[in-house]
Image (cartoon, rainbow, N blue to C red; front, side, top):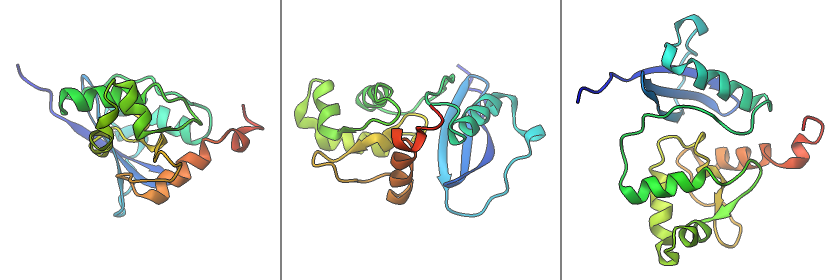
Length: 165
């Protein structure tokens, strides 16, 4: 089987530059960059990433809560993929704990494995691992940095959206 070559685009967000990677089959990864990178001009965004760019812009403008994209994620173990799929059930403005996810997967002893899977999530903003918190409610690891996790959780709070939703 011949795989499509991945392409990329850079998008400016309130949290810094996002690097989007994709193929003709779908979105492969979304990563936060800490190094400066110019935004890809709209006319130069590869066709396979245009919808992802549009939806991410709409999300940050509070016009979109749930992403509806095609994905081409080929990495991850079966367990990681199960964890990532479970993240999609955590709605905008809501949180769950690592223990909640482990229980939902039928394995309450897998809390650390759930955390490790979250850390490997290639679509960390789109597949909302920022909505996962510690059992006591504290913020715990986030590949994009805890400051970004805090920002995203505050951004998604209903009180912040009251005039828009």
